[in-house]
Length: 260
Length: 239
Ligand SMILES: Nc1ncnc2c1ncn2[C@@H]1O[C@H](COP(=O)(O)OP(=O)(O)OP(=O)(O)O)[C@@H](O)[C@H]1O
Ligand SMILES: [Mg+2]
Image (cartoon, rainbow over all chains, first blue to last red; front, side, top):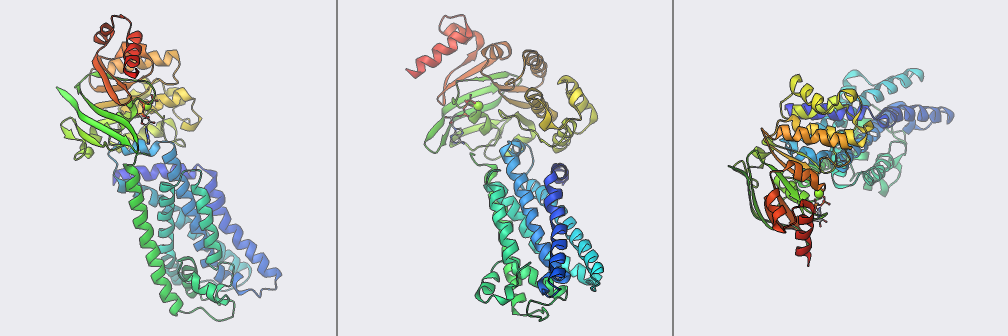
């Protein structure tokens, strides 16, 4: 466990000393909240998707994709600078590496969640909307947790298999997907077969379940409730989470003894 | 006593034969040089010995541990300064040393201070590694390899990019170290090999051409000059 903590500390320093994290992981979610708040205000507050309770789960899920970006950049850079190769000849085991990286992802993810919740609270105060109850906030954090795990391991996976040049590009595709297919700022439930398609990816179900917890209403003015979409979504989310964990571990182990 | 025994080792990268039936052994406490032109297979051999790459065939024992089955035990007693300087760029020099020391549970202030002194890293102790000059980075990279107090140390072109003074300093450090540990060193500076190594192995195109003391190599072609002798050997093999 010492080795994990040691590696985690190094990774955390590496991340916190890079300005990227402050812009993407912390600044971006805050900016989005205020942007949509303003848009909503100027459209006379009749876009349910842009209501703060509806935005909160969406922005949390979206912001987790920056955890993926950060981790993929870190892992691919460590690979590129031969830092990892060097550590491979040390007594560190593959789980030391994977845990050391994922703990950093967890740290950033939890920080983002808190920032999103605080920003959401501030906006709800400004626009005098009742905010989510404490117990539902906890529930929300738990409900979004699988999505955080998925993003952490996808980040490790992409960092392992792609170079430090291509990993950020691949991740930005995923970031866009998370934004569009998550329904964060788009009323997916009105989009027919597109909506059905989105159920097979983890983004939309995560946001959907989050919105049930925050008691928000969809674009049609109907309150979100735990229906088929949500229960099917739980399966999708779990499958993606398990797949990403296995793929990341598999790829990393392979990288440790590869000829590259 | 032989601390490293390499028997009939081959390594193929796809179509390329990087090591072709290499057998040699290295004695405990020896300063052993690996010599060869670019692409001869030196780094490949070191990577295999460190468990960074798998050999295609053959057997290797290090400190009586089998490379295939007991690599974890081997990793406890070796360290490597790779051909590419590799350090944690966003950490300071001191943090780098501490980070690597912690991996080996070796984090006592004395060891670190000693190594900082030996490598003259005092001035840059709190500087981030990415802001170091190339030579200082390499010093740090080598210093890191010593922090684990390895029994066997691999130095892949350790003096590449060092100025004359730093190189001489490093030679002295290596000579001092050699009393306690086994060192395997590669270099393209023949005077360095000549100066430091007890024995050398000359590789060419993945084959072991010759192994022996500096004197033995010199006498091979009646040249009395190490560099001439090396060139003749390699050229004769290429014909
Ligand atoms: N990952 C790899 N994939 C394919 N071929 C490789 C790989 N690594 C090395 N080789 C090839 O194996 C041969 C030996 O390479 P190696 O790096 O061991 O040489 P070297 O003796 O260390 O050379 P140098 O003095 O230039 O460092 C070269 O022909 C090289 O192109
Ligand atoms: Mg080499």
